[in-house]
Image 1 (cartoon, one colour):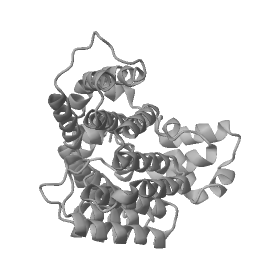
Image 2 (cartoon, rainbow, N blue to C red):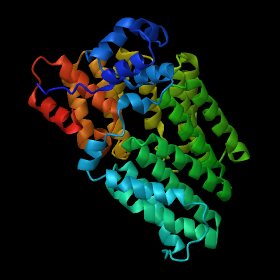
Image 3 (cartoon, helix red, strand yellow):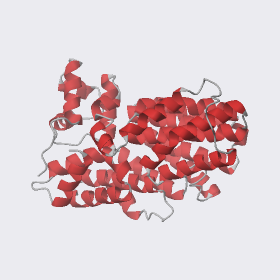
Image 4 (cartoon, rainbow, N blue to C red):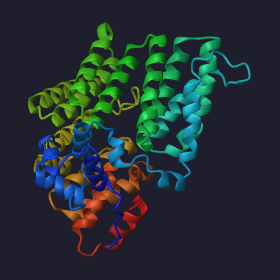
Length: 394
């Protein structure tokens, strides 16, 4: 069996609880989980699910990354991804210095196409390739936006900042991802694009989803829908509105508001029926398939694991589903199967997630905790599980 490191989310929770001078019983009273659940997580007998970790972080008033240990620097260095983060940070930081005459740019058409291509790379989970190309794109677009601003250039720059957000979230640099969202808002305002502004609120809502602040996340979702205004009937606006409803569904589920979650799913399904497969509209992956995936997520977040597994088994992912979304589905399914004690099935789902999107799966905190739970569940870990545990950094 793989030797589990003593440094995991459970031990970090124990450390932070003690620093806050709280007993296990006092902390358990402050989160929607039992004393037994907390003690099992702290000793490593139960994986720390993302919702549990968010609840503890909120109760202790600390960032969730303090508990997850993100970013996973050792693995980032092994994959040569760590060295790509600083150039992204610097490119975003220099947004307000005006034109740099030393910057030579590609043509406007080439830069707009490059911004679209990076969105596609992230959906294909080619994170290293996207991260390597992103700083130059941001630098060139920033220079042109100062030299000869147009709506199209500001939209492309907003798209590049959105890509910066997507990459840094997937790699666990949540603070930098928040900076990217600020830049996205700055560019969206100059583009005069309500869809981009609404998308920013959607992504901000997911920030609070990760941190366990669900009521704030729901406020941001409502704000995003309000920003769409009179443009709300266009295909792009319906797509963004539909995705906002999907974000609202999982936020409501985490908040324990089943009725509200169902309302959001129903609204999203209605929008999906009107726009069809809009996966590439703002690269939000919005479609009837994504609605079904979020409906499964709602059941999972409300700990209705039997229902979630039933829905997961009924889902047939078309070939057009983005690789990033496909892998996310397998990670969620693995978590559900683990919660139901189906270790072999859970491992198969994790292997499928790794096969689909290795760069994304390796840095997903939920994937890491599921693997830890599978190792604990196994008396004698099979070779595929041993290999997975080693690969993910246990």
